[in-house]
Image 1 (cartoon, rainbow, N blue to C red):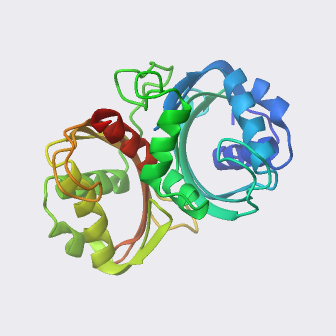
Image 2 (tube, helix red, strand yellow; image 1 turned 180 degrees about the vertical axis):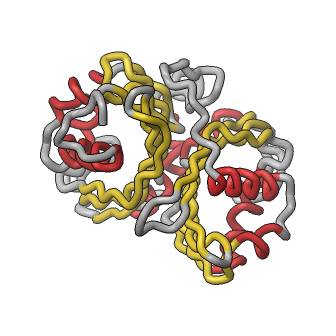
Length: 322
């Protein structure tokens, strides 16, 4: 791990280690070292620049959820220490709403939700990031409906004209990472499959997924078998039938003691002009930032994890409809 602290034996160890150090060990000040001063952090809700903003947000979150854990389920990565590495880190987070904050007055409610985050690191420092938190799962466990949460957020931020703009290519800021991942066969296989599904080749599901596939989708929804996959991807695509589907990054990996895996970062860009999981067509121009992980077995994909932020999509729709 040339350029990295020798206490980290490998790149997954670095990603898992600094996450625990920052959040659970309260080493928030280490963000001055582990994050570059001009890091670009993209979430479905916004784009921010600079580690000082990351530090402020981290402290605010820990005030509201002081017992938060970030359990690293997997790190799917590409690159080399000399040139920089990109991690796609899947996290299962637990937290109790014990403090006042962005979600309102403390409720004592216990939460479980997933996060997918892509980080580019070189010389022991992260300088580019894409992060999706399962906001739909969070707000439902807090007692909100995602639509109502999005409506309330717009009002709190000063209305449609003044609220924070959700992420889209229009407001994106170019960071230092220009890579596209690797050419491993599993990443290519998953990329091809998602592209087929987005072209309405729904028959690909029964040929490329294991019949016993376990799925983990936005809203904290766990499902099984073909019907879960079909319902999720069809419901999303039906809402944005003419939107452009684009794969921005793909990684495939074969690692000891692990199944073949793939990580894809993708987007849908276009109008909300179809009936699907986002209700009546609104004509709103919407950007969906998505990330997916897949684990393969002898009969196809055995586990699939996909996230997008439902509340940010509803926010874009509400900003159009008023």
